[in-house]
Amino acid sequence: MLKKKLYSYLLFVVLTVFTGYAQTEAVVKIQDTIKPSSDNFKPLSPAKAAFYSAVLPGLGQAFNKKYWKIPIVYGALGSGVYFYHTNNDNFNRARTAYKLRINEKPDEFDGLNGNIFLSKDALITAQKSYKKDRDLSLLVTVGLYVLQIVEASVNAHLLQHNVDSNLSISPSIIRNDLNNKAIVGTSVNFNF
Image (cartoon, rainbow, N blue to C red; front, side, top):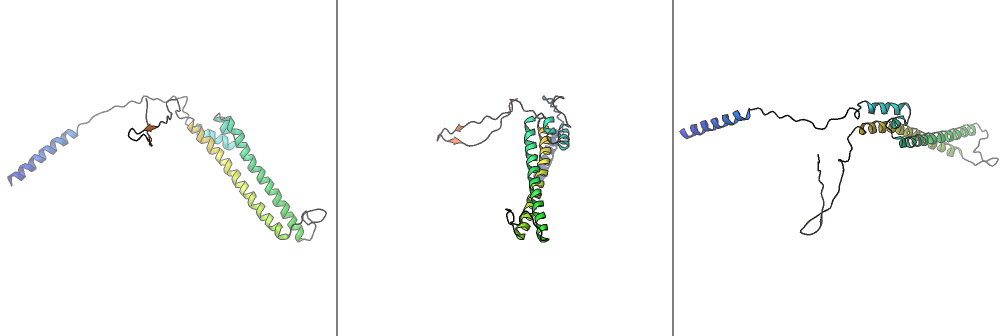
């Protein structure tokens, strides 16, 4: 019984002493050596680029000084508008011909005077097909418009990051000394 009390007391003293040492405060001051320059960091730059791109497609890319992207933006949006216009014209032609055919009047697909012949079912199918293609062209054009806004904003955001020569990838092949085979793996090294 005496040994148990002695061990309990000894354990209590040891734990008290160690917790007493654990309560001391250590102050560590860390100072950042890399300071962002105020001329590179513009917090509203991505918002401006997105706004400019929304007002006039390609203007956000010009704001980011990525002038080579402007013809790509206009080519993509112009293609979408072209296909929308073409499909809409063909849809209207098929619809007008179908309406004339129902009223038993001549149309451009009646097979007379060298015109090609399309039946009523073919005209209905053509209307459905051209309408579906027209709507898809509109959806793709709107998607490309939104995509160029997002691209301008993301590009403006990424232009603010530090990308200098110290950030690089240098791949190397490491051979195993025992069997002379290549070792597959990755490593990340930070050089300051």
